[in-house]
Amino acid sequence: MSYLITGGTGLIGAYIARLLVREGERVALYDVSPRPEILNMLLTKEEMGRVVLVRGDINDLPHLMRTVKEHRASKIVHMAGILSMASSANPHLAVKINCEGTANILEAARILDLEKVVYASSNTVFGPTEKYGNGVIANNAPHYPSTVYGACKSFIERLADYYFSEYGVDSVGLRFGAVYGIGHREGVAAGLTEELIVKPALGKPGKIPYSPDELINWLYVEDAARGVVKSSRHARAKTGSFNIDGEICTAAAAVDCVKKLIPEADIGFLGGRTGFAGNYETTPIREEIGYKPEWPLERGIEDIVNGVRAGGFGRPKN
Image 1 (cartoon, rainbow, N blue to C red):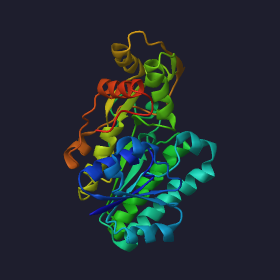
Image 2 (image 1 turned 135 degrees about the horizontal axis):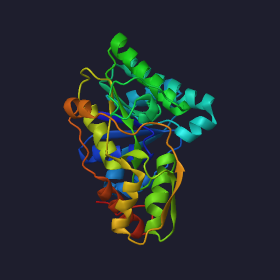
Image 3 (image 1 turned 135 degrees about the vertical axis):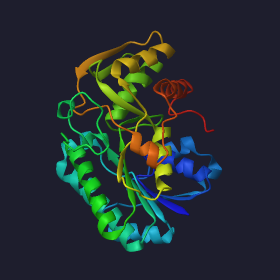
């Protein structure tokens, strides 16, 4: 079996690649601007030799399909896209990359009769808390996205459902929350990780952009990668997109976790809001995929603190 991972040199893509390589799978990483820093951090030299890097744009459908055929990929893990702040800054580009690019992935899977597509959705498909009351948001709750990024993700979920019902393209979308981990470089979660964990680990003050009571789905990258791999090995049953969780807790509780490890940490709050709800039903992904998180927030924070204090970009290979 062989996987093609788009956005494969990004944070989640690199961790997925490591997990697959260590399980004996063949892996090709398809990226418009391959940056192997995270891969070099995570993989041994021997493991790196079993990964193929391919420079390619998801909007170049002929090249994408040639790459799938050349590497005999039977499954695509689609992590490529532009993130929330960049999407808001350039909505036209966001639609082109996040929507049209995903359409190309699904079209390639249809034409080449691939076994599976797993793609990155987002919990930003759901809108502000007031749209849902104070309860837990059901997996099949209606979407009220308040950002361009969330609207794009909502659209691709519907598009994937269409490709499944009309053409039998088997896909799963995972609604990631605040994915954090060693090697994070860009996006809202990267900035949050920097302020909450990295700066305090280096003895610098941090400023959380949110209010202390803001509820956040903290998903450690190891769990995100494991959820993707597990999803890639299950035929689609009744659900096309899943809420996926790490530890759901407030920003204040996250700061408390940091201070257990770094009692002298100086972390303040700037009082902002994420703009979307933070408490989600996760029963479907437990029952259909068999996923549940293994990294509580305190463990994930400790991993990053140890990595930062060990000398920079990340922890040693293991």
